[in-house]
Length: 544
Ligand code: GLN
Image 1 (spheres, rainbow, N blue to C red):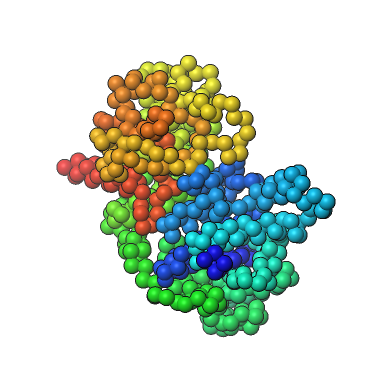
Image 2: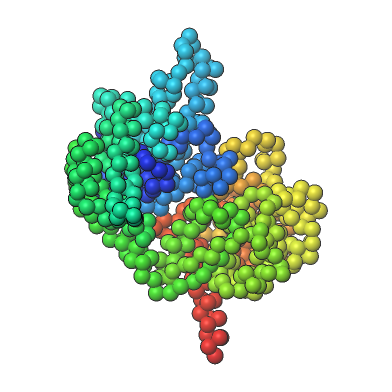
């Protein structure tokens, strides 16, 4: 099985941010709908061993897999499109490759040899590319190469692709995504950047098999013909990738262009069944033609770069579709909220989501937001740091511990209601050392979260160092903050709720990572539902 796995490399040219991840995920979706088992891998050319230590301003959110890998946000797209989990092997960085090669060198694996980019680094890249195929689980592996061809740091990856294209018994094709800009002054679409980008790949010895051309305007046959002629590509393998109103419409656009068929022909694979995408398009039509609308405030400190909260924003779209509701996200900077302006900033919202995060900046704004939501009965959803801030707020304003805090922000607080987990205390290294990946949680039947999950045993993904301090548990419960989700193995509090409130839920885990188009996350679905309900009630009162 493994030796018959076929590979598709996706490279990008001309500019970054062309949406390689979405094209790769859309192609994978179509191949999956035809009956193939497909996975997608992302190779990132930076020297960080993983993106876990990156500030979200750099490349957006860090996505976490079940097996605890801290990965590029594109893996989130892969999971949301395919509804299949990814793993450690699905994201590889140059840092990880070099770390492995240098460790080998120290261990004497290459004893006597000069260790070089070619073959040692390229061999390690090739080994990582083949790992997913070797599991025997996939008919097709799509490997997306981050960055833009021509970048110095992408060169070893393109070289690895060149070598693989020549390797006997390794079946692969290259799909190259470029941009066809529209010059408004002359009213023309321009193909020269694409021609240059393909030349750049050719200089590295790689002839792309398929070109996808990102464009704002429909491509004429003339444009496709010209690109085909200058880039040594059959015309049917020149694919238009036009801007879409929703990323979830891209599989349909790619199907209309015949991308999946061209790919299968080039890989000598049968077309199998026509991809219907029935369930998928039902969701899409609910996204495109919603019946209702709610406004949710997303309070965080990285909102200048919306990709910092990618999975949350997408989970709200999925949950909105399930409720036939458009979720309008109002992005609110946590640094700008305080007790004086909370009402002005938050009173028009139907629900408030307080986002995950790290460190001191903006924390008081999150706490002020939560106080407003708690006191004014605005549906509230706190995720990770958002849940911890809810615990701190409750301690300060209900339990009357005015100095309560998380020891992350205030190590000397006399009421450390959120504190460092025992196993974290000795850890000094930052990379890959948080509580990461999937952990079980037992849910109390008398809770809003049970209504959402309709299950008592769930599993959710984590990424944090700090925890609810169990010494305060009784006091919280007595005052009305219930601990409705507990880790059955170590008794850690994973969910808090306030009973006397329409919907007030804080979760220590990250439910957003598990929301997909086909399976919207139950907590997001219920949060949107509760927000709609509160909105309707407010309207009914106003109209009376
Ligand atoms: N900074 C907090 C912790 O490490 C929360 C992390 C998060 O929101 N992902 O526990």
